[in-house]
Structures are given as C-alpha cells and as structure tokens.
Length: 534
Image 1 (cartoon, rainbow, N blue to C red):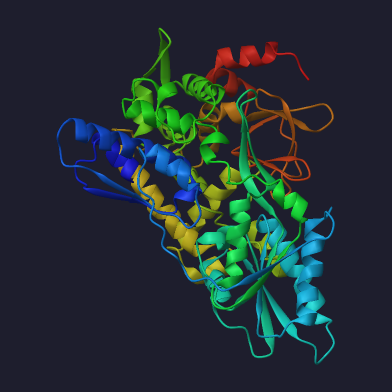
Image 2 (tube, rainbow, N blue to C red; image 1 turned 90 degrees about the vertical axis):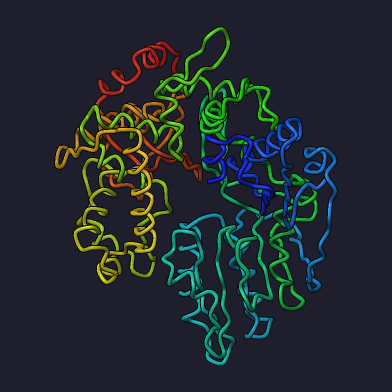
C-alpha cells in the first residue's frame, strides 16, 4: 500500500516515521520499499524538508547488513523472554524426512506427558493433509490407556474455523499434534507447544534468469529459520526441538534466508521502479542486489508483454506499461485485465485474476476426499482449472455467499469473501483507467484467448511421449494430479505456476489454441520454434 502511495509521492511527504516490521522476511515489495524509504530520506534532507525517520524491526535479521545499508544506523536490542530449549539432532542424514517426522511424533507421544503439544514443520498442504490422515489412522489403533493424540493441519488456505482449532486446548487426556507450514515460524504463537519437530525443509520460489523458469520447489531452510522454528518450543516454558538433520548438515545451511529479490522473476519490481521514475533500474540502491542477468531477464519479459520499450539502452514505460503499473498485480495479470476489452471479457478476467490473487478457495480434507471430489464435479470445466474456478465463483455469487452452501461444497468462504474484495478494488482501478467493463457470458473461448495473450510466456506444448515442454526453456513438465485436465491431454496450454516435488508439475491450467499464442507474440514464438530442442 505504501509503495502504491509512493508512485504519486516518491518523497512520502505525508509521513514523518515509517516502521518496516518483520524485515527478515525480505519480500519483493519490502525490498523495493527499503530503497524508496532510503531515497526519500536522502532527498528530503538535501531539500531541507522535514526529516523522515525509518524504524526497521525484526526478531531475526542480518543486523550489520541493515545498519550499513541505512548509513550506519544505530542498532537497538530489545531482549525478549524465551525459556531454555534443548536441541536434538539426527544421528545420521535422513533420506525421507516425512517418515522421520512420523517416527519422531510417535516417539514423543510414547515418552512425554500427554498435556504437552507438538508442532511439526512441513512444506505444503498436500504433505500436511497426508501426514494428518496417517497420524489419525495410527491413533485409532493405539492401545487403551496409552496417551492419545489429535492431529491438526495448519496452512494458509485452510478454512478459518479449522485454523482456529489449533489455538483451542486439546480434550482431556489428549495432546495436539499441529502439522504446519512455515506460517507458524513467526506469524503466530500457539499456546501449549512444548515440542518442535523441524524437518529442515520449506517450499520456496526459485528463478533461473537464463531459462526464464520460476519454480516453486522444496528446499533446505536457513540457520535463521531453524532458530525461529526452535524458538516456538520456548514461548511459555522450557521446550525441546528435534531437528531431523545432523549437526554437520545444519552447519552447511545458509546463515540467512536468501532474499526473495535474488530468487524470483523481477518483472513486477522493474515495472514498479520505472513507474517510480527511477532513471536506471540496474543501479537502483537495493539492499541485496539481484544479478544483472535477473534484471535484464525481467526487462526482456516486460518488453515481450508490451509494457516497456528499449531506446538507446534505456528502458521506457509504454502507455500500456504505465496502466499495468497502476494494478497491484504481477505484470502478466495486469496485462490480462488490460487485454480483456479486446475480447469483451473484462468482467470474467477480473474474477479469474482475483481468484489467483488469494490462497486456494477450494478445500480438500483427506478424511472426506471422495465427498469433496463429488462436490467439485459440479463446477468442473473441460476448459481447465481457471474456468473451473470461474464456475465456483459464479455459483458462490448465485447463492449470495451462503456459508452453508460453502460448507457443503468444500469452498473456503473466508477466501471467497476476500476474492470479492480484491475484485471490487481491481474493478475500481479499471474504471479509473477507463477500461470497458464487458462480459463474454457463456463465450468462454473469448476468456481463453485473453489468457493466451497475457500468459504466453507460461505456455506448454504436448510432446509425443505424453509429457509437456514448458516455457522457452522447454522444461519437461506434467499436469498436476489436482488439475481439472489431469485425465486429458490438450495439445497446448498456459499455466500459472510450476511446482517441483518428485517432478515438475504445472498448476492453474487453461487449454489454448497455438494460433492464439502466435497472435499474442509472433516474434517470440518464431524464436522459440527456431531454438534447438533439448
């Protein structure tokens, strides 16, 4: 929000103090905001205007780096209360961290008093739901008189009422086992946690500028994250942390988490800096500089989207690019909204982009998987995941967001309300930019053509062996099992995300006609056809 204000007021005249909290998270917007705040400080001082005070706060961060970046700023330490924590390491490397986590849970259950709860760090929803089901199945067959347990999942797209269950005390004679993503690292404190089981893994984005591939992959955490996780065991009393990796492995972890700006596609950052009238994006004062290759790749990405022109080695925003910068979205989704009038489908494009801007609106509990799949079939579209989501939203609106309907259909009502809010905000921006608001109604091919024109950089072609070659890098990829297209093989499609687990999967799919892609970016696809196939 502050960055959006900075577009119209780069010196942040309205403010005398800016507090940047949770600075260790180093997300893309905060990374740009560090540079904007520092620049505003300097320019206000040079102009003799009221000074701008910047306060940077975090529980764990590279203090020296922040202090040096902000011109030798003083560092203040506030000592928190943390009870002593015993750390246990694995004796040898674990080939299967999920199996190791399961064994550790039941080892603690056997040896520790029933009133003490366990927090286990896993990487994502699928892992957590599978582990929850396994724990519940084993718990059913525990002998009478032994300590009982109740397994609870915790991840961002879980319905709100189920997230709240982790904060309630377990029934008498039971202990909670909370299976969580890294949202339990810093964002929340769960009472009653005595034991932490740290798998040492996290799901994070990884970007390769040479190939243009951005993949969500499971990888090792940093030492800073490991200490954050261990700290969860000592919030209320002394605790224990079981690390499912050896001490030697821990010593090889990165000291701090690699900032998002050094492992993501920077197209949105470059677009925003150009909108802020930064004269040379390559020399912008980033705290942790991304590679020149990553910035050049982002610039090339924006040129292909029509947001930027190159003139004498300078990057200049086009009129389309200036409009794209007005949306708080990734450039490809801003392009979707601005291309939609050509295909008379702005209303549908607004809905799809809003659905992609929040956590999953569909809930799939493992204990009721068949029921959930049966409910989902009502909305399933042969035209892919994005059209399936559109059907869910239309049905949600037709019942005025009825909560009972959401429950029956395994739809996350809280996330759906958020989609409505996001959609209203994006619609307001469209109105300010004089974007015509039309609906294609049942002509879904118009919406798919629009998506082909904005997501063409994330297209994939079917190969003779049944796999897909994704993006210009021709990355071998498969359709994710949760996709509406899992049992079909369209010749050509666009996707919103690549996920790397046992292999590379595409998610958020929409089948498209190859001619639409060629129409969207003829030169790009000529080049792609000429490229040697690996």
